[in-house]
Amino acid sequence: MADLVQVADALVQKIADIVYPNGITSPSVTGVPIVVYQGWPLESNLSEGLKAGKVHVSVFSQPNEKILPVTIREWVTVAMGSPTVTATASGNSINIGGAVTTPFVTQHIAVVVDNLSVSYPVKPTDTLSTITTNIFNLIAPYYGSIQIINNSIILPESANLRAVRVGITGTAKRLVRRQEKGFHITIWANCFDSRDPIAELIDAELAGTDRLLLADGSLGILRYRSSTQDDSLQRQGTYRRDLFYTVEYATYQTQTQTQITSTEVDIYAVPDGDTQTLLKTVIN
Image (cartoon, rainbow, N blue to C red; front, side, top):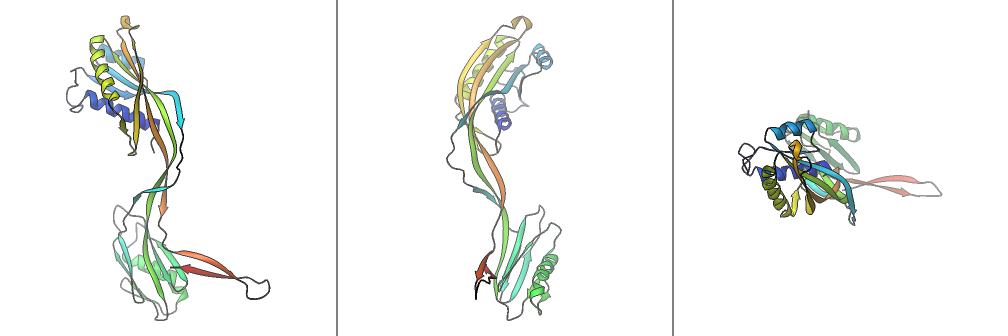
């Protein structure tokens, strides 16, 4: 999810792209070295940089913040993995295939036989053989004549193999808040000849930017608020231009979700009197 640090980082990156359109290994747009960073500058670093002829551009979050209304807070799946292990049914045979790969993919294998449902979570250290054996061990206590042949589990003919599935995990997110946060962008230079062209360029480019791409893939809405000029420290060799912008952005909550491969329903039967009998029914 995006927070104010990520928004400030996005502003820093945007400004760096403006003043170094050909990359930081090439000269800046004005030929003057420009340092862009998040946070308020340290006085010693700023003083040394300005004396060396560098221009500093700082991006600092302000305390002013406006909370915006949110009407939809539903979970939405944003990413879903693909299984690398396969599990198929052929008659009364459960066949395990595919591979356990690196990087590891979280997945589980579900088997529904008659009214029995078992699920095995695949581990990074598994092989097809160990997966087959572990699923066999989950089913074997309920069927006397079950056997393993290579990477297949053979059930007795009387068993009803209803389903074999591979489930995976995915990432879901939901919008929990929207806010408009103020940011203070300051251009520091040792003379107005260095400050003004850079400040004018940054302000014009930011004012023409409606959407700001954030690290989580969401978009922030960039808005101009005001600007000021401060030459009160010119005797100390410090000239500054302050630009005030706000960014409207969303805060998301994320979670890992596991794919459902079978469900179980509890049914209570009352054959006589007040005695209740619990019958578990697996829904394929």
